Length: 110
Length: 116
Image (cartoon, rainbow over all chains, first blue to last red):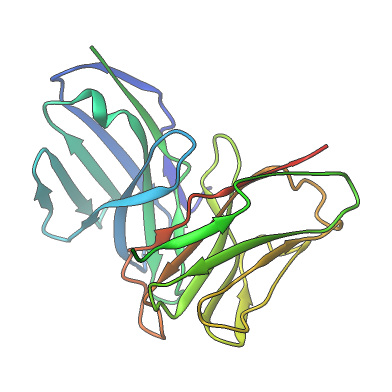
């Protein structure tokens, strides 16, 4: 089983749609959770951290479910510019580096 | 402007040759990392360094070597022992310094290595 698992997609959605991605992690001791965005053939960039109580940043909402060991990312009112690969990232307290999922590809269609 | 610079952006190598990828940062970050990304896969950690003159193997260190003689620089050498070196290589840095990773890694633009 992969340490961090994501549905690779691709998710093709029309502009204005709401789309959600899930990510599961295997290590129950995981402490920190993040979503990164990676545009085609570019470097990843931090999109948002995921807090225990859930958090929102504009059209983006991130949630954490420790009992089921998954995190989610919800994008409302999708824009063409949201087209990218979204990487789920987990940090274990015993390790100082991050573990990346393989990413979920999103394409927003006009 | 502060950031991370990787070079070269594209590199072609013949089998059996060693090649060194450069990574320089002026963010005054203590920690630096090298990742490899293959199509359809997540980033895999090759080596990381939390402080100058110290570095640790990541998950896929075989066939690679690094050095950290200066805080700003963390070059990666892909040796001929690396069996499948064609990939996208990403260098990153973070505040690190013994603190738990906050999650914000700053990446360079990457280096695409192709072995002919």
